Length: 514
Image (cartoon, rainbow, N blue to C red; front, side, top):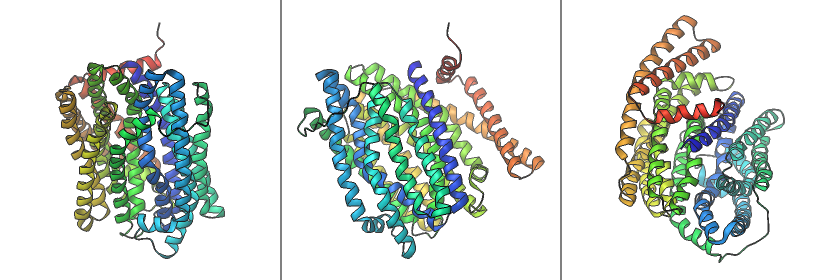
């Protein structure tokens, strides 16, 4: 686990750099555009190419790794490389077709994804989308590149692609203010191109050589398709969930969709930094254990990974709930992003943050199923969760407006993780779920103690230093540092075993071994 933890921490550091730039990007966007019409249009169209291709792209990303290991065992290194080129070429042709259809039917797509957009807002969204749809090809290529590097035990390059992407968008925001809003869409497209170009030399270093090779009836491709169909349905259901949220938000008037997006971005920081970083490393390991028929190690890494995530995510969730408003104010409130924007975004952030705990464990459990070659169970559980989310959306939107949409999302994650936990236990037998529950309870108790210290420290410093920007930054940083100290002390007192993993990882990273 120490090597896995080391890789996870390295990815976290790279992801932190990318996410800091992402926050800078959101801050600059908020400064110039706030929760305006242009911000709403950019937020919506920025995600549509990803939503369209993610149904296929995410499936390819998930299924490539276990099928790669199977192909390598059967046909050797050359066979696995041939499989990689085959799936890459097939995906390229598919993506080009999707891009062209997206450009042709841009108006119809906007009518589906933004039922509340009209007039100038609708026209601008159509123009933005036609530019961004070209990015579908590069999104698809990046999925294969990242997967290939992961099976080669190379995680850092793929974690750095977000740096290129965010830099391109930041430059485009400044250009758009001077030369026109279309530069926002152009910058997003160039960012996707840059991600692909960045990974090419790293793939070559790991032995990848491109060859134009297509064989639709290849055994590995057929196996991948068979496994992918249930998963594709599950991913499609998840994207339907995202569509419903955004479509309903677009009916609530200017600013609501942007506020949800800003809150979601802040929430995604935690997900990408901790959840995605760890899962990126453990998924190839899970697939390898299944391929080697090592069930003991498979169960062990599921439990250890879940516990490590809970140890980190629970206090962050509690901290986000109690400090959401000052966090949003410090990070985003300037220029066109008003105090009203801060209130809307912080309200959504509180509700999104609650769902991170369920999302984190759900992602680990789902990777367990995929490694086992079971894509049907996650599909069924995710579909039930999506149905619950949509029903709750419709129930909550009237009394709670945009906050109801965030609330429904978090509840659906909690439902899914419970369903998947019992499903995995039925499939592989007991895997020490009591340990996961025990870690959650201990982490929650430590987080409650932490929250008391955080609230006291923040309020005390604010009353002394005032509400000026620098004063609030100092108050926020000091309260977070004090709260983290309290949390670590309580976790050590409660004797949570996974704390030792974190300590050992830091030691391996920063202390020269003799």
